Image 1: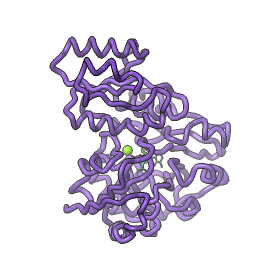
Image 2: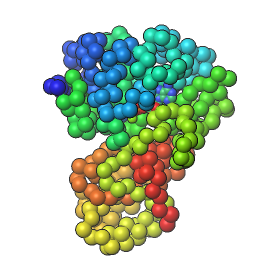
Image 3: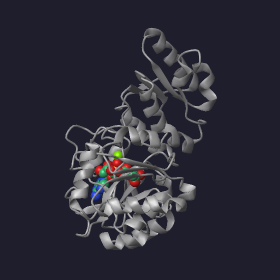
Image 4: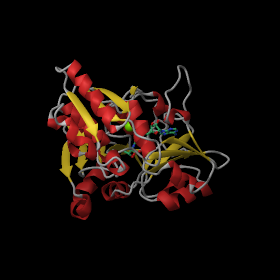
Amino acid sequence: MNTEIVIINPENFRDSLGELRRGAEIICNGGLVVFPTETVYGLGGDATNPDAARKIYEAKGRPSDNPLIIHISRPEDAEKYTYTSDMYYKLADRFMPGPLTVIMPSKESVAITVRAGLSTVAVRCPVNPIANKLIELAGVPIAAPSANLSGSPSPTCGRHVIADMNGRVDMIIDGGSSDIGVESTIVKINSDNSLTLLRPGAVTLEDLRSITPHVDVADAVLHSLKEGETVLSPGMKYKHYAPRAEFTLLDGNAVSRLNYVKEKTAENPGLRTAVLCFSEDIDGFSDITDSKLIFNVGKSDDLRMQAHTLFYCLRTADEYGSDRIFAPLPTTDGLGMALYNRMLRAAAHKIVKL
Ligand code: TXA
Ligand code: MG
């Protein structure tokens, strides 16, 4: 398939309405368009068209029992596709448009293939102006998973999206680097109006608890699944976000991390070793490994920068042919929970206690 690639600056997206109209037309005709959002790039198709959903699963190489999020341009559009509640509007007033996805009972208008046969559907209203305008122009909700090939880290820049999706979709909109860098927070509204956090993101557990104290965290968010365990969100059971290189999390302080990586590189000097490190810790690593394999993820207390760079660094380490990657194990407060959740999966739960 020939993929049209267009570059749009989110700050001047109004100069590119022609391209966005063309993208919207592709969606309405059952085609696929990759578009930027504030979290990660999405692989979009018409959520009311069962064939478009099938094409999405195919382009991504995704099992079709893992449902898709539908993207709307205004929070109140959820009415057309779901049975909303007061709790939805409490969440929407505070966090939408933005990086929050809410799971509610679905109406029939959402293609069953989008929901992977479930009675519920996940709804999100992105704030990125390109995403928001594309949805508005399409006039239909856009079903979109992250625009990576299934299993690899979500793309957060044009280069990474083109690497995975060129030739698989009708159009790719390159809107630059994703602001947040990790996928949206997913929360389910239960029948008693309590919430279950299924995937942490930039809307934190603390943020959700400021709306209602009744928020629990699904087990799979911070722990490994036991053999045969059932999951609340089908996506939890799949291997996720993993770079090709072996990825290991180091649970220790700056000194013990540096010493450990030193030891490992001395043991195996032939391996290309990449490290994700905090800006204050960079110096020590330059004697150990190739400088382009040392990724500055921001200051140790700058969780936003760490989220912004995580997938970018993992994918870039792969592009540079790294054999293995080491990174500090994050804590789980605030945005740290999202980092911990993604890094644990990317590392297939490999943590070295130092
Ligand atoms: O930030 C994001 O959410 C990005 C951008 C593109 O919006 N999208 C994204 O989609 O991360 P995806 O498909 O990669 O992840 C959606 C997750 C999957 O793990 C899926 O299992 C879960 O949401 N999900 C979708 N619908 C669900 C439902 N009805 N019940 C439970 N989990 C659901
Ligand atoms: Mg994904």
